[in-house]
Length: 162
Image (cartoon, rainbow, N blue to C red; front, side):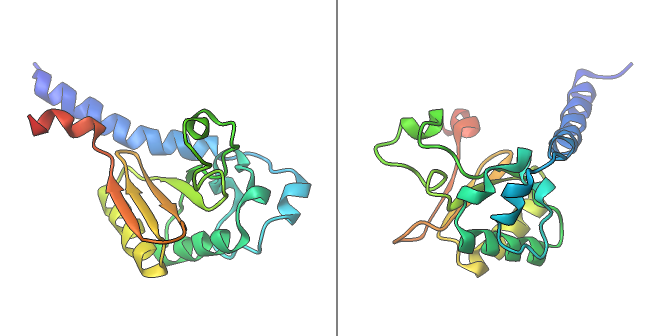
């Protein structure tokens, strides 16, 4: 008989492996020819790594080159969950002014594996990204103006603080 703890561990590990696989499968999309020509020459990224061909023509050219350099340094595929967001996107309309995603200078990179997540963060710091946010399933990177900032999203750990 299998204990509930073993079942829970199996389910947790199963989904930890399944989610990146599903995200990877979802990224295999065609990008319109017009969009391909508006992107910078990317050395390491394939356009399929940008989830659903995220509006690359609205991303900052230098920022995309920096993300491409990051991709080359880490040596593994980076799945971009979120890149450019319209100022009318639900996450953006709650802000006083457009955020870094709406400015085309931010991405969220899928990252469940703690080792890969640490590699992304290490190389992002070395490349000079000015905003680094650590979330349970992704790493946010941006090139905001001014002071460098980093944060850890703690929604899932609030219960530990009581």
